[in-house]
Image (tube, rainbow, N blue to C red; front, side, top):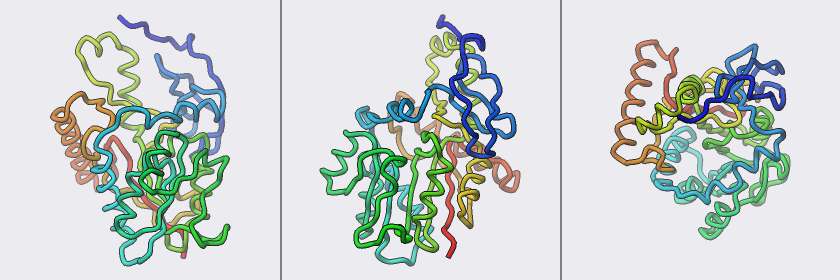
Length: 304
């Protein structure tokens, strides 16, 4: 049986400010993990890196992994975003953490001006080979790219997106403020990220009994990056950044199985269908108060 970490074996690395409530006091890690809950809200810190540089190195070769279904996923994402901002012509779209550029390719097919920001050299090379302009590096080093023909400091972008990126970042609250300042009046910020209310309990149970999960061949579907935010935490982040009309949308699973973590397409389809039904049923029965989807999907607008 795999060894299980104890609390005594996991020493805190740092005590940063919670991006949601601003305090710096964290509970003891959940047994077998480095997940520490904020003392004042339901945010979790994955206390695994000593600084931003160390954390970013975990993500600078993500696109080197085998990926699949990216274009189907991007098409669904662009359909949702374009529905939020329909009626505008000549859209300017910026994707932070754009990977190989699939979302931007979908936006460009609708005649949008597009630009990406990415850490991973493999993703950057793939996007640029497809003719998608990408700025290489970290958001906190490079700042937000500026669209063609637009003065720096102006409201540049009609759409800025973070697809499964914000909960990776050392300072997601700062990233959101930067994005909000770069949106054109009425522009849309689109965000997708993990729902800690779903993933943290799964991660904690798997960490307690890793041998049992291995013997039963149970796939690990729990994911917590640098931060674990609940649906309410995600909403608070967008509101605190100065965005208006912040809305939670049904966090329906994306098509396919991007990293093959569910081991087969039929299993992926079944598990994602069950997750969608559970999340939607809970949301309907509670009048929107419960949000049990594995991922959080939300949007906000820059003030007009």
